[in-house]
Image: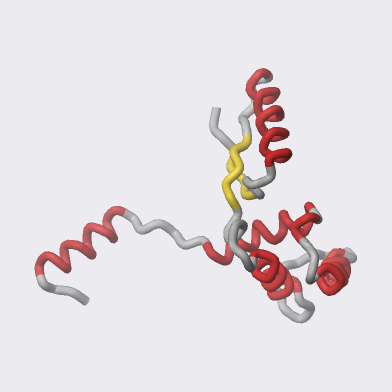
Length: 130
């Protein structure tokens, strides 16, 4: 049984308790459990600005980064962001989920493969530093 990872607010005690109860039920039924990983910048003092800026950047009209098809979601997002900019926008689950996903995608960097790391140190040790 492999764990399913997702990003969320690990500081929310209620969510973590619910997830624990949900996972126990899944395990009892032989279903793969979920594991929450802390979303980027979640504990940072400027998390609201971080997520607001990301959502605006990727959801603004005229940019073909996020495609919502024929839906009112972009207008809803933009309207809510304007109204709620000084409040906790992450209290809205759809916005929090979108923000967490965009946060991970915008900050993720692939891990170096073992051969790349080995080659880097071999160049350093042999004096052929690039």
